Length: 227
Image 1 (cartoon, one colour):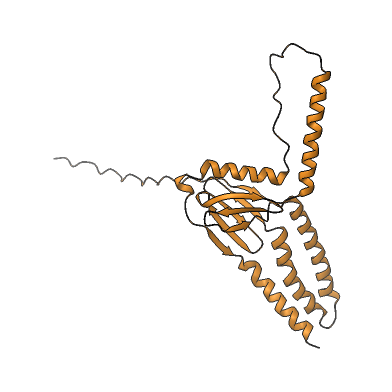
Image 2: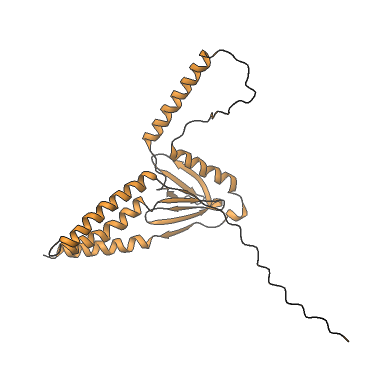
């Protein structure tokens, strides 16, 4: 009687990975550039005081750097908005707010950009500032484009239609910040009712910014109060 050959066990089939949604990331280019410049100036002055300073000067410079560097980074480099098909994550200077699309009620854009959840809580979007100058510039550009287009249509003689017409953008000219808010509104409308876009709002304090800034403030206060 022959015995059946022992077949090697079939390798475990890895479970299918969960779907990953690539984030769209929005930042303020002017804020990042300004923050980098301020940090470079602070590093230059602070290192110079640490190296060449006498008495309490190096300690005061160290405390000032410990206080100012996290705050400057928090208000310039840190703010960002991450959006995908599941949720909106807002990274503000001192907080990180995560809102599944199902919890978002509306976006408001006045003197600042804000998002409201369905509980009525309002969160400011630091990474997408409102620029009245950019809005005015976009309005002037749209007005000039409309006037030039109308004059061109009046002056241009009638011609036979081209067999392959070139598409022309006819949408209104919008400031960059308003365009970003429009994109976020489209994401809410597209995914607000999706099952994977439901959940609860999460708010986390940025202790990595608050802790060193508080330590620097305490140390600076102690140094300045000591005669």
